[in-house]
Image (tube, rainbow, N blue to C red):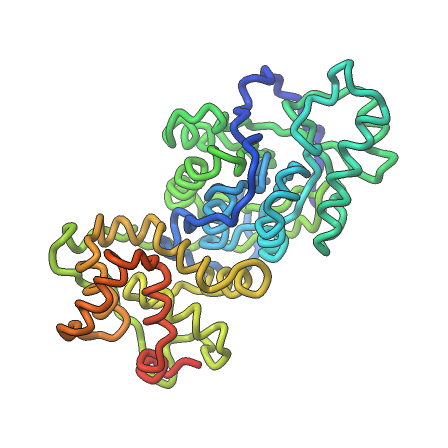
Length: 395
């Protein structure tokens, strides 16, 4: 039986929770999750005595790269978490909310616009509208109605609790605040994570301006300590079954080239009828596999392969995923700041396994430098080319 506990309120000033997440506008995130395929954990489900931890993320989904980067870190380690979403942000970027649900994470209610509902200006009707509107925008996406609610700033009172209970939700606060919203770099976040004790409910953020830094810190922490913990969804918010055991991690990718130098693949793809352990007979799966090989010169890890197939099913086009990969930390670390000519050379080497012919190099370099064709489009054209499909044996 999962042990439940009463969560204490950690008070903080409203102004300290980073109001950047309230920025208006919505667009699909164009940055790949920070550790896209850099760390590859091996997991095995078995009984254990690890410390149980509940990772939670507030204020999303973000229209920048925050939510996507957090999702990618969690996918690397096969971790399920709980996301407390702001209704207005869901309405502005429904695709990211769907990506969270598709990855198997729980979603909770975090008000419509991140208001402090204990403010005297909010009547009972106003409070109900804040909660009900958020429920509606989530369920309209085909996502189950949240059964848990986290008050913004941890501010609550009996009136809010009664309205929430009448709506079938349970209030959940936290026991460990990483204070990632202060945006002081990754080290303070990691230091907080190292204070985790059994059944801690850890507060982090994937909202605007928070998520990227949080993802970097979480990645580093999991690389060092992931084997020590059993990460679960909050029991108040969903199925809180034990998580898989993180048994190994790999060394992060290090640069093999200098910007503008010879571009060398970091690893090699297994092209042929049976490329590794991936089923690439499906056209969608084949496209994801080829994008990994084309951008990173290597096979995908299983978590990343499954995640991006899910995203392609539910939220994003190949062009958008290509843009994610182009902005990824792994790509930037491995290849640096490339000129258009170097980028074309890289495409030929990673995608087709050969140097470009003179005419091809000139044609595609001009497409980039003179016609302003996006790099993500050019690489995608190569990745989906008949030549690569025949070479790779993928659909």
